[in-house]
Every structure is written in structure tokens, then in C-alpha cells.
Image (tube, rainbow, N blue to C red; front, side, top):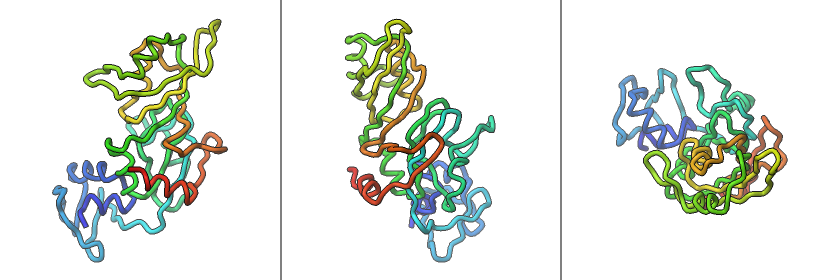
Length: 238
């Protein structure tokens, strides 16, 4: 088995992230540092370590949906020692990781799993999985601004893919509106950047769905296990 697939199968990270870990020189096989992505291992006898800690193939596969609160990071740790979403699932024995990310200030739906192949599949750009957000934005977008948003916007050095946006509530007096936004890209802080590009910066942002997966009745800070049907749906995405 290739080393990046092995690391992903152990539930450590997605296959793409596993490649980064390998290239950073953090992986040892039988005591020797491995930085070749094409390196193959024998999972029955080779000893694989990341940062000096031995890893092994994940047993039971776990799939959960977390209702992420604001003020949590979706990485394991950061330089500011902020709380991680993994702190909210610490009672799960298996090591799970998020599929994609939500930024520190954004709340809502986050899928976590130890299924590295599914993580790789759902984060690959060719799989256009809609992500649905509810955003409270400053002001009330005009029809022209909504059209610009849907057609794609130039942000930094790229143009966003076509998206969907509709106003579901507006307050003329307080000068804000609530918009439902659907995108299938996953660039860093993309929804916030797109709203800023049409001059309606985000005040609050919450993700409510990923494809057909929703939070259902999961309260903020809590999680639920995906049903068999939900897992099959995610695996069927092409």
C-alpha cells in the first residue's frame, strides 16, 4: 500500500494532507525517514511513525456530524492555543478528523471521520458538493449584486465558480439581511470574501448542509452519528 493511502487509512488525515506530512519529513518507516510519495509499505510488518508516534490502520470507521460553535478551530492545534473541534468529540475512541474546514468565527455543520478515502474524495475539487450557508450580511444586496455573486467574482488571484444566493429576510431599519448561500468550492474564507466583494460583509455565518447531509436536531457544540443511508449517500457522490 502506498504510504499516503496508508496514513489516510489510519484516520490520521486526508490523502492530500498525508502527502504534506510525508513531504515535511515527519514520517518514519522502520526507523528511516520517508519523503517519497510513491513509497510502498507492508502494513502487516512495517512500523510507521508520524512525529515519533506509531500509527496503525483504523478499525471501526466512524462518521459524525458536529454542530461547530464559533470560537473553535478545525485543525488539531494552532499557535494561539485556541480550542479545537476535536475537544468536542474527545469521548470518541477512534481518531477522527474534519472533512474540509470551517473558519474560527463560522459555526455549523462539520463532518468528521477516520475514513481517509472518503475525506480525500469529498475534498477533491472534481467533486462539486454543494455547501449551504446562512449568512447575516451588512446591508441589503441589490439584484445586480446578487447576479454578480452568482456569476462568479474575482477574488485575489482567482475567479470563483458560479454560486447561488438568495435573500430570505431583510431589515431595512437595522440595515442587514439574511442570505442563503450555496457554493461547491472550498477555498479559505470564500463565502466571507465573496460577500465582501459585493460590499456586504458577513456579520455572522453558519453552515447548515453539505450536499444532502444536514444538522437535523443537533444542538450547538454537540454531534450525532451519520445513519447508514447518509454514509452510503456520501460514498455514492461522483
